[in-house]
Length: 106
Length: 177
Image: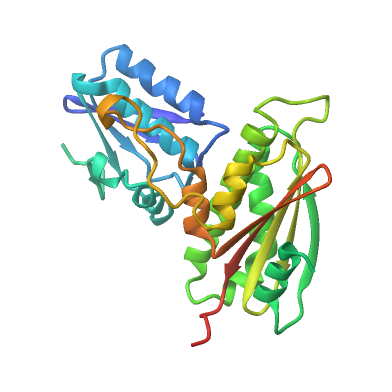
């Protein structure tokens, strides 16, 4: 699973470099992100620009990561493609997250 | 004809249907992606005639994925009975106005209460309940049927012998006024 983490000021941008965020990868995805949080990341921007498809499992994993962060920090999303946005909208999860069109420059 | 067959015929009436065979899904979640890709590839000519082909393709991809998630998770309880594991046979029928994807598996039957809700078009109609007292926690699942229902125009289920038959119908032409 390709997750690339790079610093952005005080934040970490995590680029998800696989096309399907689905039941096959959701568990590992969530473990990788919660591991980052447990090791100290408190400000994460999740770049989903290369994710072409997300299902209920993938969405559940993203929500699970948000819940794991809890009040300790912030996790925001960036570059959701139309199919991914649609799933967030249908499940009424859009308003739960801060969603950027592009990865913030700073 | 039983209700199952009538549904497919109604959606596809008015033109030739193209039988495109079936695919076996060899167990586990990793097989879902390629299986769904195969369905989309076979449906491509029909989808191309839809008013919004990309939206139609996205919806079909999501709905079939969620059904197959359910097959593994619920019909087979997430386990792999025997060496072969969970499997499903998929078929696509594409007509001039709609396409129908059928998914047949040999897992446990859909629970009666869900069958009833589905027949009333209420399965996936309600928002997912939030866990935790006072609804203060976010759900991390339970969206499957909601996403399926929102993605296709009709869903039919029938238990035939030891098989579950689920059919998803997606219109590819505007409904005649």
